[in-house]
Length: 283
Ligand code: SF4
Ligand code: SF4
Image (tube, rainbow, N blue to C red):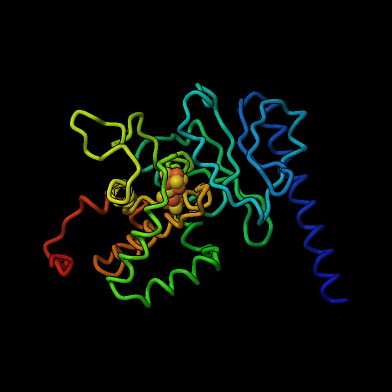
């Protein structure tokens, strides 16, 4: 009985929120203040991204706990955005990515309306970068249970066992680059893997070449990765590549005292040097 009442209350909150979101988006489109909305709609099995430019379509927008895909990935797609001012409905992790994209001058808040849902189910519109940063710091970090289980397993391994685990996993990679396409921080027009003068990374798929690619990618993500997990979810083979970035983020925090929420607004962790930095990683 209590469960049924809770479920009814949750549905009522969701419906109220959806209608508030639709009204907000419809009025922004009608007034001409924005030209494009990047949000979620109901898909066949789960919510999927949708792109709306007509106020009449605002009613199909949804935004709730199942909407976990990182929509920030679309914000650097010039072919999609053009010169439009855009509304984006951002999950917790998408907010982290937007914060980093703002830090790297890849998006501009004058051309962006960022909306999210608070823990209490309220619609929030951010006015400044500081507001986004403050929200991220105060909101609870969503937990992905599968990741926790695998991370504990990895932490319990010896260095040799971990190397074996990752060599085995990464040897399966066929370099489709779906992980790269899903990542908001992979926005370079030419990726280092396609560079052939000089050829930094072997382009074919082999265990060594795959390890080169994934170590390179994880290094590039240091202090930039939002821990959204989109790269791992996009992998058709289910390789948990997002955990490489996550472990590097943890390493940066424990070894260099750089908290993720701070590095998202600051200099690149990889190129930031302090005389007191530990050098225990040099063996
Ligand atoms: S590296 Fe993976 S987990 Fe990190 S921001 Fe990119 S898609 Fe998300
Ligand atoms: S999505 Fe998976 S298979 Fe494709 S490049 Fe990334 S790790 Fe390799």
